[in-house]
Image (cartoon, rainbow, N blue to C red; front, top):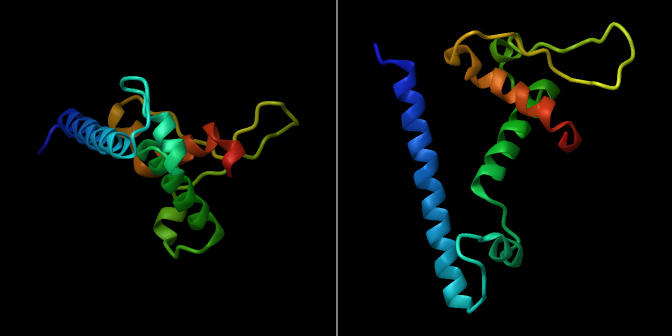
Length: 127
């Protein structure tokens, strides 16, 4: 059996490598288009090309998946049973759409559906 921490480190390594590839590409595009940018700041190039970063796109993909799952565009009743909605007992300024279970381990915290529900609670304005 593979230790969970090792998988998490491997995932972080892949995310880091993807970010490096994106930065190299943006640096090449900057050189090709002769645009100026600060070292290691590729946001002007992203704005010029009307692109978003890979991490932003990953967050949007997760939010879209959860939205389609809840709206019924994706037919997966097994996944839908894992989504818990938070119904507040009284009116409050603090509002979370989903009730994410409390986890004591990283293994539980990194459950895909629970991560998506956390993202949705953190980014309520983009839903």
